[in-house]
Amino acid sequence: MTPSLQGKLLVATPALEDPNFKQTVVLLIQAAEEGVIGLILNRVSDKRISDLWDTIFPESDHTSASQHINLGGPVFGPLMLLHTRKELSDLEILPGLYFATQKEYLEEIINNDIQPYRLYLGHSGWGQGQLQREITEGAWFIVPASVRYAFDQENDIWRIGLHVAGYNALVKVLGRHDFPEDPTLN
Image (tube, rainbow, N blue to C red; front, side, top):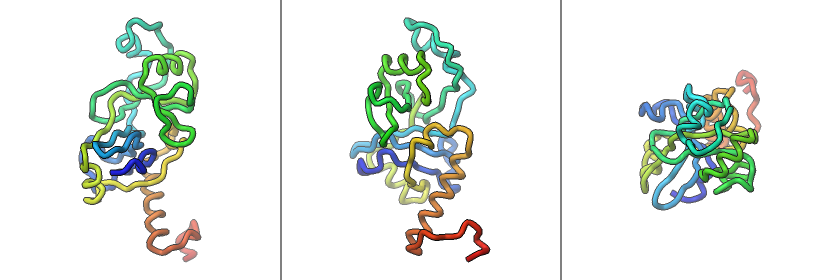
């Protein structure tokens, strides 16, 4: 696994039956030789940030943030935040998209409602070579990411991801980019 996968999307193929990842889209946050960390973009909990804030940060002021908490994956870890403010980040994932885990950054963004942002509980992780094996076995498609995907909760990004993966495969095989929208025109 190379760092070049940082900022890419993993789109679960229809064949992936693991309930932790079935029909998911995972944004790769960090990819290194020793492993990969990502966040599932299309799993949202029924809990709101304000529901859990006092439990998570008991020494902090209460927040009225009504946004839902996202479920980043089955691995327990620190709260993680995707946002667009460079000065409040630990890492730039792709141009204009930032990642934070520091309490001060989370509090600043959430308490001041600096939109857009998404708060994640849990994350996805793969050990050395594990993700590459899953990709080789056909569990994941890799597609380019954009800031829009990180915050768009209204659309079915899994189906959009499948469409993009299919289009990219056609371009690679046929060497063309000019496919008509209506396939009956072929």
